[in-house]
Structures are given as structure tokens and as C-alpha cells.
Length: 520
Image (cartoon, rainbow, N blue to C red; front, side):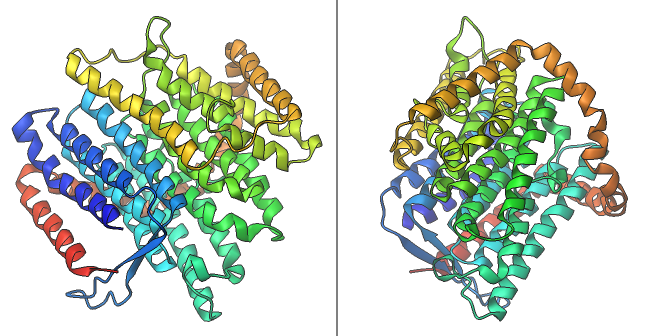
């Protein structure tokens, strides 16, 4: 576990580096400091590859005597691969921000590093107490990253996200309490879990934004999805990891068909809403939402594929959100194409096992039904890939080379994850090859009729204001948006350069606690 602990230390050390880099290196400095911290963290995480299953215990009991329970993290090959997927997503975003530094604000970079520490901690959490703490930390930084963006619409969305994510934490806490009352273990390796399955399922559906718990997603930021990529990726990636723990327990559970129906409905809505978006780039956000539900459905039907889905999904959508779109005279669109082919299930890419697993587990009569959301989502991704390029490539050759190298390493990581998780262990049978060709043909046909499909989806989307359920949550939003606005003002104050010394003290304190609390 030493490389994992060093990974977290590298990410935490990146926080004061981001704070200082603006003065030393100018506008691009904070993004470069974040990208370098992520590169170092990724290298350290790779150093943990192949290690046998092991645990690390952090006892942060002094000077905070209220925390009398240790934080326990467990490293296994499957969990390592899922943490690698989250880090690769952060790595891609970091080098994209370096190529396109924008305003060079410190807060988004600082919170991004913090979210990655919390997300990888949640992936390795060995017990429910540790999972609760890491989920709470991830939610707090998710809300802060929302609130550093200005506008009343973002404040209202942050209020809704706090409400929904708080419900997920409450469900997880209630599940832990029920297991404790039943005398069951809180550790995954020794947990029975049957007594708390409904609460576990509820917590996971909320974490994955499955309809009707989708209101925590920030559609207001879809027009700048490259800047807000990790807001969409990391919470869902953590949810897919939790789902991978849970799906073996759900085999034979009476509520499984209802869960499968909710996942399928979310996938269909994701495809329809993606096509209803006037901006294809905003449609990628809806397609990401639907695709997460789609792969969660694959994991439910084939639990052995759940770790592969949890590892590949964040890398695929990090590539789609950060890589340039298609241009006939340029190879820069190839990284996003690699992600689309993975999501399509093409045999050359690691997503083929997920496609085959879904249709192998489903009865033949359900195949035409399953092809509908698959075709809608895949064609929406192609539509987003074919959009006109919004931004030219960086003018400086050095930044252009580093950006291209980062994308290349992202694709290599995608292939490497497939190899590590044995994504090509089985070949597609002839019937599944036919289904794959039909699915690809359906997606191509929808794309060829893009204008008509978009208009039809927009007409259908007239009922979308009702289906989004914003009207149901509006009263709650009005009541809790004032505290969110006050928090937004506090974050603006703490982001001032004069307050950066405070963050240096906070980072130093965290590192001291990690050093004193680590034990084996």
C-alpha cells in the first residue's frame, strides 16, 4: 500500500503547488502544477500494479479523539484497476486544462485534486465507515466545485445536489446501522449484506443519478463540459465501483427486475435527451448519464463484468469530454473515436466483453428491445464527435505536444485496463456478431437521419420539463438555496490569494495526520 499512500500525498502536495504556481508561472501555472501532480500520482499508482491483496489502516484518533474508528483501505487487482480509471480521467483533464488554461483560477484545480483523493479512497474503502467518510468528502468537494462557478442557476443546482447526495449518505449510514444491529460485519470481505440490500440499492441508484434521482447532475455546465468533466465523471465512477461490490448480492433478490427496469429507463431517457439537445456537445453529458446506467445494467446481468465497467467508463468519457472532435484532415479526433468504439462493443476494443455479456445474459426475445437504447446512445456519441471543433489547437508547439501525449497515454491506459481485466478472454459468438452489426447499423442509420431524429426528439421532449421533476424539487430548492449562496460567498473569500497561507496550513496538517496515523 505504500505507493497508494504516496499517491495521495502527491495529490495533496499539488494543492499548495497550484496555489503558488499562478504567481510563479502566470495564467497556465495552476493547470501545469495540477497536471504535474496528477502525472506523479499516476506513476505512483502504476507502481502498485501486481501487488498482492493487502490493507492499510489510518488511525486518526489524536488529536481528534472523536474519530475512534480507523479508516481501512484494501488494495486488490480489481480495485487497483478501478482507481486507475479515475486517475486516468483526472490526468486527461489536467493536461487538457494545461493546453487550454482558461482563466487559470486556483479553486477548481485545488478541488479537482481533492476530489481525486476522495474518489480513489472510496474505491479502496474496505468497510462501510471508510466508504461513508470518503463519500462525504467527495460530496463536499463536488458541491464546492459547483459553487465556485457563478450564477443563481448553479446555486440552485448545488442545493439540489446537496439534498440528493445527502440522501445517498443517509441510506448508506442506515444500511451500516442495520448490519451492525443484525450482528453482520461492516467489511466487504466478511459481509453477508442481505438485511441491508434495499438501502444499499437505494444509495447506489442515487449515486449513479438513476432516474428519478438524477436532479443532482449539473446540466447548466454542459456547454463547458471540458471544464466540468470531473463533476460528471468522478461521482458516477465511485458509484459504479460500489455497484461492483453489490451486484453479486443481488442475484436472486426479488427487487432485481425493478432495478433493471430503472437502469433501462435511464438509458433510454439518456439517449432521447441527448438527441433533444441542440448542442451536440451538451448531448454528450446526457449520453454519459445514459451510458453509465447501461453499463450498470450489464454489471447487474453479468456480475463478473462489473469491475471492467467501473474501470473503463471514466476513461471513455474523459476522452470524449477532453479530446478534440473529428476533423477529416487531422488525427486529433482519434482518441475520442477509441472511446466510442469501446462503448460500442467493437471486438478490437475492451468494451466488447461488456456488449457480449449483456446480450449473452438476456433472452433472445429481448435483444431488439436492448438494441434501442444502445443505438440511441451510440449515435448520440457519434453526433457529439462529429460536431465542429470549437477551439483551435494550442499555438505553442510544446503545449500541443504535451496535450497530444496526454491523450495518447489515455488511450493506452484504456487498452491497458482491458488487458489487466482480461477483456478479450472470450470471442464473440456468431449470433452476437450479428447483433453487434445490427446495433452498429442502427446507430449509423440514426446518425444519417440526424436532423429528423433531433426534431423528433425535440417534439417528444416537450414533456421533458415534467419528466425532469424539477417542478417537484422546486420548493425544496427555494428553501435551501440561501445557505448554498452563503457558502458560495465564503468560497470566493477563501479563494483570495491572501487566504492561501491558510490552505498551506491545512495541507500540512493533513500530511501530518497521514504520517502519524498510517499503520499496517
